[in-house]
Amino acid sequence: MAVETLSYDVVVVGHGIAGLAAAVSAMQQGARVAVLERAPAEESGGCTRYTEAFLRLKNEDELTDDFESLLAEVGAANPDPDLVHTTTRPSSEWPGIVRTLNATDPEFIATFARETIPTIKWLKTFGIRFIPAYLAHITCRENPPLLAPSGGGHALIEALLAAGRAGGVEIFYETTARALIQDDAGAVVGVQAVGRRNRRSDVRGRAVILASGGFEGSIEMLHRYLGPSAVNIRPVARGGHYNRGEGIRMALAIGAAPAGDFGSYHANPVDPRSGRPEAKVFLFPYGILVNKLGRRFADEGPGADHRIYDGICHRIQEQPDGTAFAILDARINDIPEYGRAVFTDKPPVMAGSLADLAGKLGLPADALKATVAAYNAACRPGTFSATRTDGLATVGIDPPKSNWARPLDRAPFMAYPLISAAIITLGGLKTNARAQVLNADGEVIPGLYAAGALMGIYYRQYAAATSVLRGATFGRIAGADAARHQAP
Image (cartoon, rainbow, N blue to C red; front, side):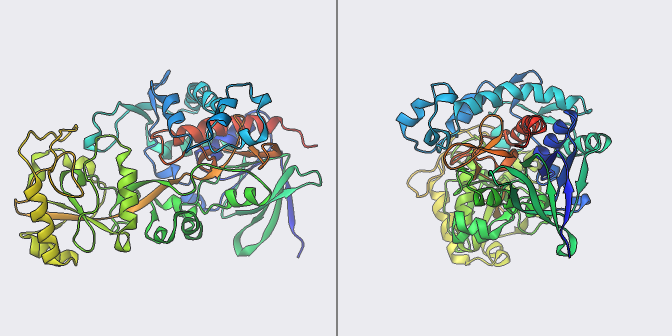
């Protein structure tokens, strides 16, 4: 059977905020655009469809004060300082080894900062409204307010989807990109795709934009890059199951440069009993975390910054079966708004004694009672504050608890099981500030762009409330540039 060939100006792989921003941007430049989306229409949109879509902005006209400094802070591991210094020269003078450095270059960060507010203005032209928002964690009240689209990421998807369809963008659902097509000169000129019933097609264009997310839904890639305990991770929402890393793999297969921290991921603690998207539970700072052996394994209250949750989740992943239990007592009722930090639709496990609680959780009762007794003995008097770091710390116990350390001695006791859920994997592709993918020698791969979560720009730590902005901003940049690209 002959392979079907379809021709467009721009081919976009992926249907989340990055892909739709790219498609609409290219369409506005007059390009004929095709979008390939693995998911069926009703589940399309990747993780964007399910996220609150927090944005690191003071308002519609201002970035947060730390926007560029934070991106620089998380934009490198331990790079060679001499190579980093080279980036102070004009980018046209950078040698290839600097262009592919394991660090996010200052030109990229500057472009991100410069183009974010214009992108917000652009999104507003599609009827999207932005409202003040706060992170859900009660302990994060010290963090500044953010913005979010009214209706969350779902509103972004629906607005851009309507605009794209009205402008003639063609969307192929249940269609997975498998490989890039190159011409004899090495330029990317299309995508090999597979649709329903494993039917093959070649979708050709002057340019291809990869916007298919990370690899949260690929157990093989998670295991390869994060190690054997990655089997304990699951995507934070249904859309993440469709993110299986093909965009990254097909680009690496033709020599693209990797970037970002492949060994880490942004995570949230979720209730494994729930199938609800983002079934998060953020109450453990007010109690303790134990593993299936009934033992503590981490400082449950290291600080009020949102960034503590990644580290905690990575520790949960490493526990037996990747499972932990947040143990709380009746003192939780001293926090009238504690329900704000619970997103699961499953009730806590309740018991009148620690022994009964252990039985219901399948934990060794003697071990749990000993763990709680040791923790209680390490607590000291002090002033408790639920919404900010209070310095109420344990003494003489390992691991310590740095804040919110109150004894667990008031029945009834309650618990939530927790696992680590991947929101965004941090490894991806190296691009320049125009969203063009670079090869391993730092040269642009003609006709190939990347936007969104498969751009590797974070190392060790995610910069909160920047991922949707990255997708929208560089999707818009990639779409406009790809529409102007002329095949050789």
